[in-house]
Length: 274
Image 1 (tube, helix red, strand yellow):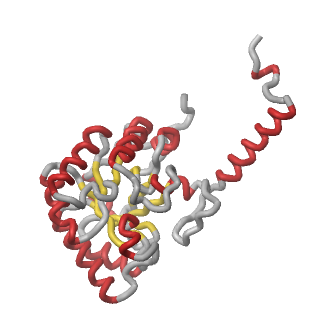
Image 2 (tube, rainbow, N blue to C red):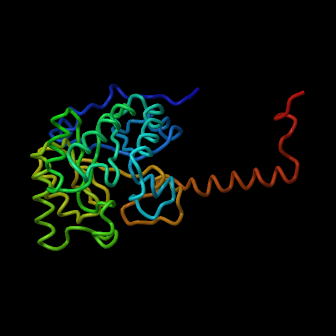
C-alpha cells in the first residue's frame, strides 16, 4: 500500500481549464504511459495526464510516432486510467486515426473514449481538421488541439525544428489556433514554437494553451515523465528540464544486484525461506 499522502482537494474537470485561464493559474500536465508511473502521478497535484503517442518513441523505440496504432493507444490509456482513477486523462489520436474521414474519426475517437475511460482526445493539426473537431465536439467528445511541431507530420515538416519563426508561418499558426477554438477545442498544446508567438496566441485565445518548448507565456506546461525524471541519457532537447537522474539510479541498482548474485551475497538468509 502506498504511504504517500494525497493533498488534492478535488478532481480536475474540463470546466477547470477555462477557470484556470481566467484566474491566470497555470495548468500542469504530464505525459505517461504505464500503471506504475500513473499511480505516482495520481498521488501528486498534477492536473492532467496525457497518454501520448510519443509512447512510440519512449516505450516502443520507434524513430517516429507514425507507427503507433489505435489499439496501442487504447492499451496504454487503459493502464494509465487504472493507475490514476482520479485524474483528468487525455489520449492522443494516432496517425491516420482521424485523417481519412469524419466518420472514421468519430468511430476511432468513440472507441478510444469508451474502452479507456479517458476524459478527452487530442489531435494534431490546424484548419484541415476543423470539420473533424466540430464533429467530435458535437458528439460530446472533448478535443484538445495541438499546433506548432506536430510529430505525426515530421516528414512533411522535414524534421523536428522550431515552427513559426517565419512571418507567414507565424500568421498561419495564429489563424489555425483561432479556427480550432471556433471549432470547439477546449485547450491547445503549442509545441516547439518561439516564446513570443506562444504568448501572442495565448493572449488571443479564450481557452488555455499548454506549452512544451513554447516558453513561459502559455497557460500551462507539459513534459514527458521519462524526460523530466532523466530516464533517457541520450535525449537532451532544450525544452526539457531534468528534475532527477533515474537512469543513473536504476543502472547502479541493477549493477549492484548483478554483482551480488554473482558473489552469492544475494539472496541472503533474510531473503530466503526456511
